[in-house]
Length: 305
Length: 104
Image 1: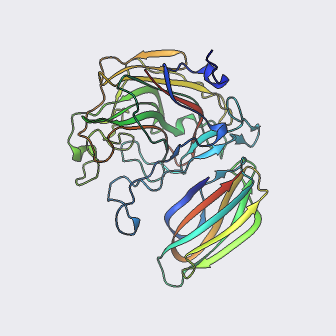
Image 2: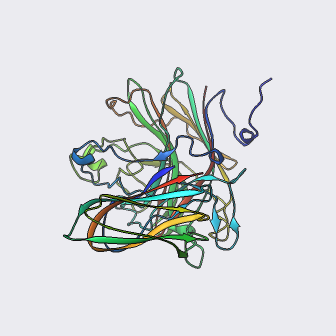
Image 3: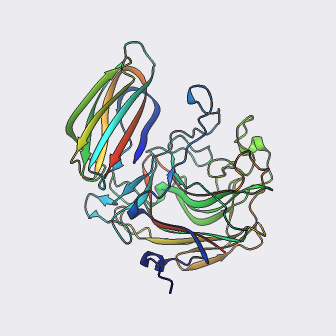
């Protein structure tokens, strides 16, 4: 008889569960995403993206002024990503602190097959002012940063909620446009990054919400139950299924809606040194106004088949 | 859990740190590291603050101060409820890193 943790009942894992991270039990290996501090005095490489100022993550009880403590979906604590109270125009590179990320660093331990990312999450703004603030959240998403002997791939989706205050509410998947490395880095040269790497930040962004890093999922405008007040959070389900053999997206599920992604591939980037076998799931949130926005994650399951 | 709430931040004048939820923890230490004097003879002072909701803050009572001669300083706090931050002021200019260490 196989006995599963009751917290798994709300997931649809593949045959082999790599991680089941319930943040009631701590950070489970999820950590702030930071650059490489490898230069003199632990400096980082010059880049048009300032990567040292992202908002730090924390364990949260989701506590607000009026309702008090939400707790998490099945406990007290969730993983909370919190930006700093800053944002720039959508079309510009993300400004320092306008995003918050959590990453877990692992390596592949099975032959390439299906790979799935599931999470239960909620999103809202800091309730530091009156009104309803849904359109101050620009985007949130999840992805894998993976590398085998052939290529490095970013595989993921994001919910593009708002562009300069205008609600979009559409899903996008990661796939780089046919641009140069310099264009990928917002028209600068000599950046660390190659086309296709770190699409969370890189890739030019355009007023209609399109970017060099993401493609719209067709017919994907979706309401996500933001609720009627910034201090009311509803837990939501998100799932992404990827085929490592075919190097092709399979599908994503948001709430009860499944979107077919077959026929679409991520972008192959020549392998980077020292990261063969990389398997890094990553979660992020981005602000669309000068205020803190939050992504709460109750739990995550990464599974393979 | 250790986190850098502020990292190599150039501060001139008033500052407050990234609000951290701390409901799971029972003890905390703020470490303030002076990374660089941006102006000669600069110094800082800071107060630990607590909050109901991470929006409205009040002094907890613990204070600290330092200058460029003290590379690393710290304060300890207990019984702080659900939120913690440091609120402070720099006279002159300092590049500061501020870590918060939380334990259950």
